Amino acid sequence: MNYQDRIHEAWPFDWPARTLFSGHVGSMAHGTHLPSDDPESVDDVDVMWIVQPPRRFVYGLNKWEHWTPPAGTYDELDIICYSVSKLSHLLLKANPNVMGLLWLPESVRLEGHPLWDEWIPNRQAFLSRRVFDAFIGYAVAQLRRAGHPNHMGRLGKERRAQFERHHYSPKNCAHCLRLLRMGLELAETGEMHVDRTGIDAEEIKAIKRGEWTLAQIEREAEKGLARLREVEESSKLAAEPNTAVIEPLVMRTIEALWD
Image (tube, rainbow, N blue to C red; front, side, top):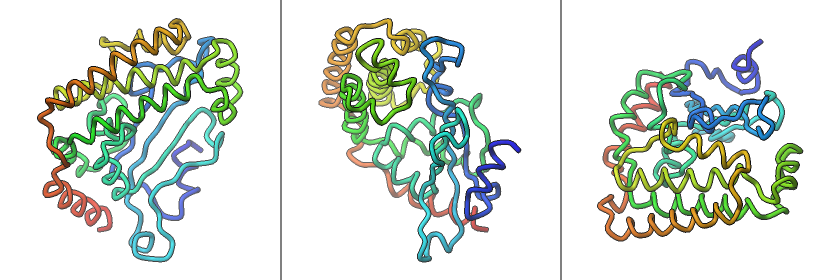
């Protein structure tokens, strides 16, 4: 039985016909995955699913917006599933964990309903000045966790061992700098380079291996934060997302997956 079948068994409804999109995210999408035979590898294989639950899970007593399996259920797979409505609300907030879906390379796409192809041409409607606070907030949180030993208690033994070796978390540091750079690209160009291959993937891998000092990372983060704040002052991004475009798209998608 493959992991898709096992996920199906865990859900209270039939998911294949209700899938809007699924694909690899995280390091697999960024081209920064460290394989298991790398001495510094602590990477999972991340998969995100977007589905539309049946009407009873929207109108009824038991709401369904997202699902994650218990840790270790699917070995190295780290899976998260969102409803279409939950996805749209996260996108409206410029949540960095989902914004990349709209620029995800075809090479890491697993499944896609024809309606997903309507979301991609409309991705600019989700862009707004909310990008600045969202990406900066997530990046700063990653850097804060990187140097905080108390945070390591929530993680697996490999991550804790890596923290003990380097006295900080290289993976959190890599997340911080990647978020700042991708946020800056999005703010300046209105586009996002999810796949970092040929851009800074090798540098991010080096950071994940602990080849940078924490002081180096903090200096680079300060530069990134300053640059993002500078761009924010003159940004031409809309103050808010274009809900006049987004709402009909979301409603069309939900109704199509119900039918």
